[in-house]
Each structure stands twice: as structure tokens, then as C-alpha cells.
Amino acid sequence: MDRDRILLTPGPLTTTLRTKLAMLKDWGSWDSDFNAVTAQLRQRLLDIVNGQATHTVVPLQGSGTFSVEAAVATIVPRDGHVLVLDNGAYCKRAAKLTQLMGRRLTVLPFGEQEPVSPAALDDKLQADTSITHVILIHCETGTGVLNPLAEVAAVCEHRGKGLIVDAMSSFGALPIDARAIRFDALIAASGKCLEGVPGMGFVILRKAVLEGCAGNSQSLAMDLFDQHQYMEKTGQWRFTPPTHVVVALAESVQQFIEEGGQPARLARYTDNCRTLIEGMRGLGFEPYLEPGVQAPIIVTFHAPAHPAYDFKRFYAATKARGFVLYPGKLTQIETFRVGCIGAIGRHEIQQAVNAVADALKELGISHHDHSTN
Image 1 (cartoon, rainbow, N blue to C red):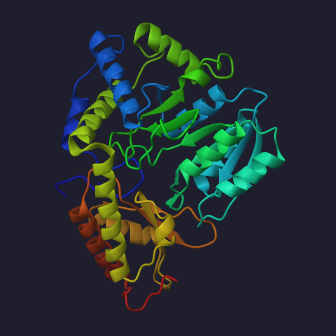
Image 2 (cartoon, helix red, strand yellow):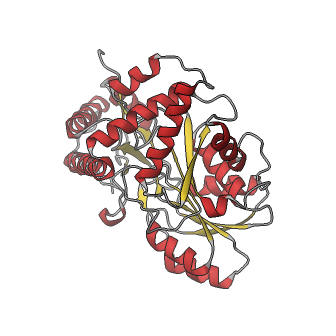
Image 3 (cartoon, helix red, strand yellow):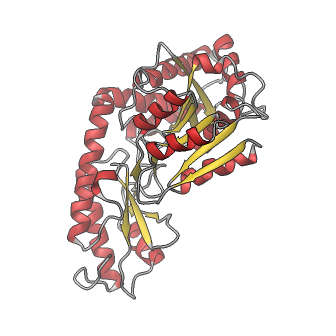
């Protein structure tokens, strides 16, 4: 195959040649040129949410989960009480890391096919005034469901609670405006909708909250207060930064700006999502979620109800044709997921649908004789 396989996953994802080429140069982590890249990148990430007046960006080495853990440890005092709104796998991960850090935890569960309820949150906060912070996953990529960020933020503000938002799969694609939505921390990563490569996360922190966070974190490497203090003073990262990942993200953010920013990216991903669902429906596949709650990031499909279907074989057959799918995250029903994000458009999505059609034929499944309901 003369091209990379296209990753139809929620990150890592397919990147442009420009982003790949940015990684061919070596950078000194203390060098002024690299510090300038970090400084400009931090500003541009803040620009995406209009947070210049109220927030600051703290980048962190590692996967996005590192930054979620760092944000919770830094923002929530050790005697704090965290409420996690849970409608999927990544919510459960946030709950687990909160508990492992010794913070008091309450989980408010919802169905995996439905958004979390701001009204239920309000009732819970009224019933238990000891809760100090709420964690929301903006786009729960376990299924692809979109959660109501603005409404949840309004409830938290009304009740005087801190809000920590995992915007891993939404940042850069879905609109988030820090002037209209009040949050203490919003977390995302390099290898998602900004179309960089994986290896670093970043946390957009409300400055007024960050000032009081000294000593909250029980971790040296993941203390965002210390990371911020050091970066503001020196322009440098405290510990060795993922230099190639940082410059690749800086390059991908430049392309994000050239494309037209968040509205343009959302338009492309929405078109990808529509093309995908229409094409897959033509092959007999039905999405797991109702259209009204489906974010244009990743789509969960019911697996074929056919004795010849086996995900590993199906995956291998589509991979051989140049497309990498994602397994399902649901425990009760068999599903698989297809991402709509990355440096791809409707042309690649249509090719992916064709690859799925060929894979079904290889497995001996006619789209006329399988029902996914």
C-alpha cells in the first residue's frame, strides 16, 4: 500500500503531511526557539475558547488521561467531593482516577445512549451540598453521545460548584466559549480534533481558581499549579517536553487556523459524519444513537446480526483495504465504532464505506441478509 492506512478512530488519527514533516527537526527543550513555539501554542489554544481574559493554558506530557488526572488533582482540594456525571466508559475512567487520588467520589449514572441530565444534576447538588466539583465528559466517545455542556455549566455556576470538563474529543470541533460557559478546568489533547499527534495534553484553567491550588496535587510531575508557575517564570516546561509532539501540534493548529478554525472543522466533521451514516445505512448498518444526541466525532454502529460476523476478522478485512476501525465500548450489545475526525473528508469516508462493503463480502455477509437492530 503506497499510503498510510486511514485511522477511523477517535485519536490517534490521520494527520497531514505538513504535520508529519514538522517532526523531522530536533529541538532543545530549553532553547529560546522552542520556548517561543510553546508560548505561541498556549496563546492559540486559549484563543480557540476566547479565554484570554480569564483563563490560562498549562500543557502536560502524556496522553489526554494524564491531563484529566492532573486537572482533578490540582483543582480539587484533598477534602473535596467530586460528582461524576456518568454515561459511558470515559466517565467511568474519570471516576476511577478521582477515587485513586483519594478524593471523595459520587457517581450519578445515566444510560449510555442518552445525554446526562442538567435537571438531575441540579437535584443532586441541592440534595448533597458537600459536593464541591462536577466532572463532565463533553463528548463521551464510548458511544459518541454529546453531553449538554452549557446547561451543565449553568447549573454548576448557579449552585457555586467547580466544573471540570473533559473536552478531549470536542475541543476545536464543537463550539466552546469561555466567556459564556463557566468552567474551572477544560482538558483536551494533541491527537484529537486539532489533528496533531498523540503525546501531550493541555488544561485550560480559570486563573482565579488556579491561584488557590498550591499544594492540592499529591503528584510532582502532574501538579499543574507548579507546571504553570515554572512556565510563567521561565517559559520552559518543568521536565523534558515531548518536543516533536509540541511542534507538530503547533503546525496542526496553524492549519486549523488556515482552514477557518472551529466552525470550518465542525462543518467538515459534520459532513464526514453524515456521509458515513448514509453510506453505512446503505449497507444495512444502523447507528446506536438517536440523531439528536450524536456528536459528529465518532459513530457507534450495531454489529451485523449474522453468524459469519466476527469483529476481529471484519477489522482485519477493512484494515487490509486501508482503513482502521475501532472496537465497541458497550458491554451489553455488540457494536463497533467509526471515527469522523482527522485530516480526512467525505472522499475518504466514502472509500471507507466501500472497504466495509468489500469486507462484508469477504466474510460472506450480504447486506440484504443481516439486520443490525
